[in-house]
Image (cartoon, rainbow, N blue to C red; front, top):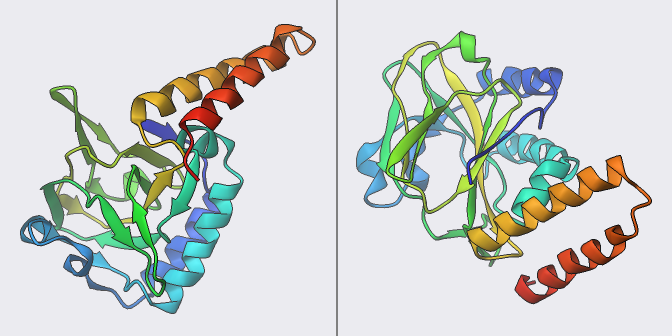
Length: 226
């Protein structure tokens, strides 16, 4: 499931983060790449332990806590603290797959990467190229979302970032370990949750709502891992 999530950050919030990033001291993005990915990665990245990374990452985490669609789709158990990258002219990230386990900086903790997320911070008209291209089902989809919008996608998908040919592309990225491990099961729960929300809006007194909600939570108990 490739899920664009609109308005994770309001435009003013995205602009404020962008303003801080434009003044930041960037490092080499290859620092967090695996041994194969380093050969195809050419971008800049804020160091994981940088104070700006931590401060802005907390703003992103606060926004995620308020995003009902993200919570319903990801069912997050653990989130790797958000990182930030920059693609300038000529920079790109070739075809790669994200690592299956990520450490949490400064903690004796590991996160299984069920889902990947890219939160776009630059207005799409401010740069050319830079699309996030995710391969799925024998094809590929390209995403270039508005500032403050996010793409959520399975971390096992091959993906890449097209070369930037004008301007600069700023984004935050991170990984999620879900309460529910399998993508198919998460999709079933997400569809059921969407249906329950719609039914609750349209027919709030429908007698089947409680029973259907029970089915949702029983599946979550059966499939969940905390």
